[in-house]
Amino acid sequence: MHFFAARKTLITRAIATAAVLGSCVASADTDIKVLRVEISDVEKQYYEDIISEYEAQNPDINVEFEYIANEAYKTRLPTLLQSNQRPDIFYSWGGEGLRDQVEAGFVRDLTEEMRSGWQELYPDSAVRAFTLDDRIYGAPLYATLVGFWVNTALTERAGVDISNIETWDDLEQAVATLRENGVTPAVVGGMDGWPMHFYWGYLATRIAGAEGIEAAKRGEDGGFAGEEFVRAGEMLQSFVELDPFQPGFMATSYERASAMFGDGEGALHLMGDWDYIPSKERSTSGEGVPDEDLEFIRFPSVEGEPAMNRASAVSMALP
View 1: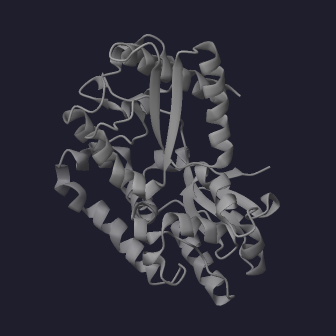
View 2: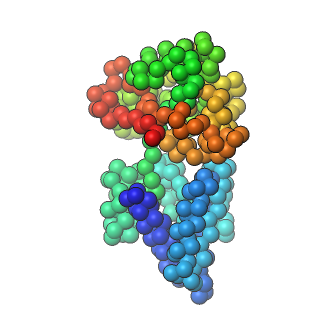
View 3: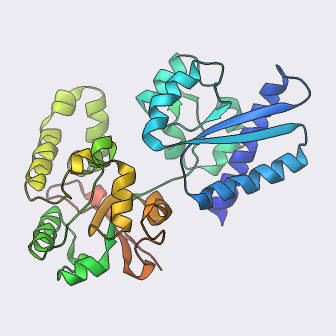
């Protein structure tokens, strides 16, 4: 409940800030355009409820959300930011992409607004993701986890006990067992890049640890060509040789892989917790994998990884 209250407060404050800025250049009525990556119908309704409440309290302000599919969003956003159709508020990611947007002059410095109350809503780590040179340029919308969604009806049919998947070796053994028993071990949207990157990124983080990642970003010890990152790539290559994915996985989009998991076409799907509702909505039935057959487990540990990585690992089973 606190999570949704915090989200609602953030969205309302963001709209209010944009309205103040808009009133400086607009007439009595102010239109606020919000650009967002495509989300589930449930989440859209959540936003609509907030908008209705806000507009009722502020009748001179009109708020409009526009949704664009994930990959198309990444392509269209740079063009929209340079046009007269530029949104007032837009969904984005941290890192170098944010730096590019800031340096191009498309992002407002939110440091003062954040420090006057918004920042209290978040852990410091969430704010750091949108902080460049001690200035804050974004307000985190929510925190997510990435792990393996599991269709337990399929794993049980193949004789795989997912509670035993603790290490990378365990995962490889599970993949082999699933394949031997006629079950596609995992689905992945390789065409879009980032779903496949979760495998390498997790392996690299497990092996190098947070300190190793930061050192590589500074170019130390060979940067991302260093030993730990090469090892992560070699482990992923060996994993792919086990034939863990659906046919044509490198030509499969994230949305299609999400639907495939919802249709029961693979036992595992390494994806964020956000895919719970979309996977169901994208399935042929619109219902997806039944909750009683659905679990969410952590990415397995890797031999030799820093102890703090193992301590921070989490898993979650759906009620």
